[in-house]
Image 1: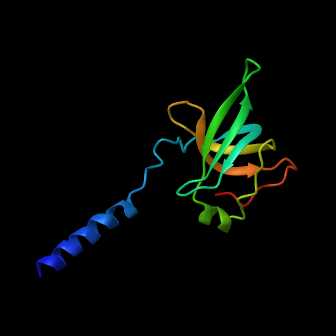
Image 2: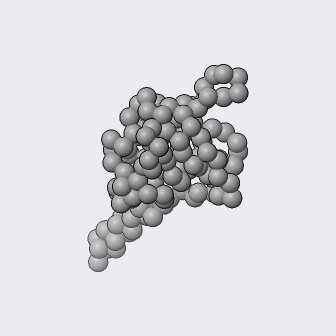
Length: 122
């Protein structure tokens, strides 16, 4: 009986992290910004995919933006693949920016170098 209780406790403790997930509160969902830039890297990873986008700034330099997306499985349902973006491609994205004003956001939709949408809007 004691062994069953210990096994049940271990199973419950291990299952807890599966439900943990960070909030989207860091993104200002009342704002949408449009960015155009060059893909530095497209990370097709769990639990979130990311686009590292180089965007020209007012001083003539470039800023690196860290743009979060959903999980690859969900992106696939929206028409994305791990080869949807390649380094060096010029894209335009609409994002919910980070509340703190740093260079990041949550991707809502993306347009490829040919002007066509990539996947469907999230």
